[in-house]
Length: 251
Image 1: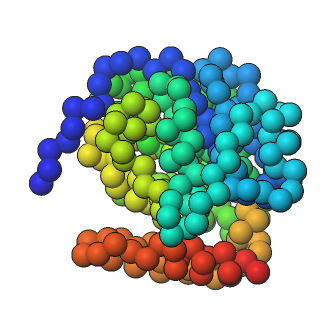
Image 2: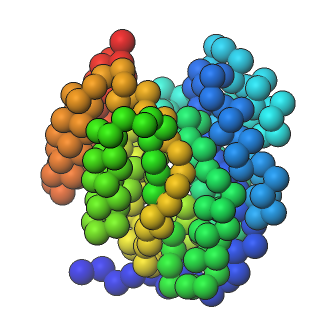
Image 3: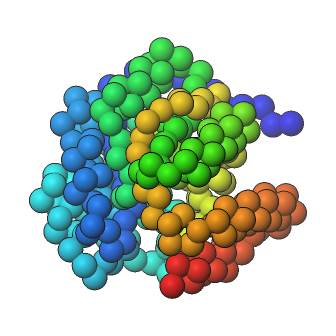
């Protein structure tokens, strides 16, 4: 078993960079940015856009974000993982929080994650729990299942707002530039650098995927995460194929 790195050091986290991967998110990008702008810990908001053909970029700038363009092929550092990695490498904050464009992160949750990083120097990062923006009871089960997986298995998904100390993650080139499953892979890699935590919280994530696809979404996620975890033990999973399959199911 590999020993953990000592990268999770005692340095104080005073500033937080918000990294938001986006593509054609004009309907929700302003709401996402405005949920984090103005928090005293937030030193910058970086929207990493995959060449949107709607108003995502202009709306993000008007809301107070800096926009970076990252439009590489999914086979060569493109897709969501590549966008996030580009944002992390451009960030200047002591810590980074990755917030999906259709997610709202209340300032109280930002205060909590920064307080945890400063109170517990052995913690390298973790995730903030989310709730789905629908009153339907069926989504409460999904939320509890997500909480259980992230809290007990330390595998968080991107809509659970992953956060971490920036310098050690960048120094160890830890964030994967894969088009999908980057959140799962990063959750696993992060344990190399220190303890991970899960904050049962109230970030608000969109239920649009569940509403578009229905119950099949749960089956797809469970199946493909299991396949990804199994294949990464012996070979490099074909994340480009998984990416295409995932987004084709939305059409």
